[in-house]
Amino acid sequence: MPTVFVTGANRGLGFEHVRQYSEKNWEIIACSRKPEQSKELLELKDQFPKNISIEKLDVTNFDEITALSEKYHEKPIDILINNAGTLGPKGVPEGMGYQNIEHMDYEIWRDILEVNLLAPFKVATAFYNQIAMSKKKILIMMSSDLGSVQQNNFGGLYSYRASKAGLNILSKGMSIDWKDITVIALAPGWCKTHLGGEEAEVDPDVSVTEQQIMFESISPNDSGKFLDRFGNEVPW
Image (tube, rainbow, N blue to C red; front, side, top):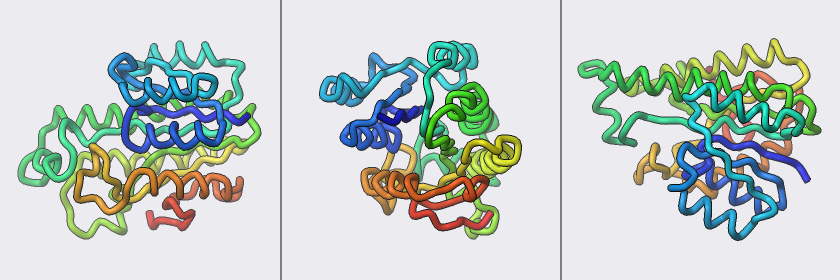
């Protein structure tokens, strides 16, 4: 069976990827910062004990990333979903208040960059070999439409936007340096998660269903692209 590796698997889009891939009988390495507190993820593992392995991983702890890579150094990973991300301590709309042009919380900005930019780079480079030895060879960098410079038409959200625009640059660079895997920056849509808030347009299960369909249709020729959940290119 194929293997998928998911960071931030305890809630939101990460959890939904674990749930849907479990139902497809994939093998899942589900990473959570606090597995013992990940109630829904633990319950899902009880339903699919042969499919799900839960691993403790704080993506800002680079020693943990290295140790986990060493644990799975011989494990082919067909799809790695670099999903863990943050808007800071609050989601939309409250989170917009501490990252606008009139009021910027720089400590929160540093935390956002650590989680959304540095951590996915470390995870990708730590698990590159495992992706390269698999059949599908796909690295998904979970970005956002808010990381598009061209689509920025209302300002604000400087910290989050900067982190996702930076992530897009990382994805493009990795597609150039790593010719043997497919690297995609993915805009999943504005989803009803802790980050996206209740006013968001898309339910997580709908977005993930469409994402997983798209994952099956992409090819190595798509490497380096910024795509939405349908496989359409998003303007940089």
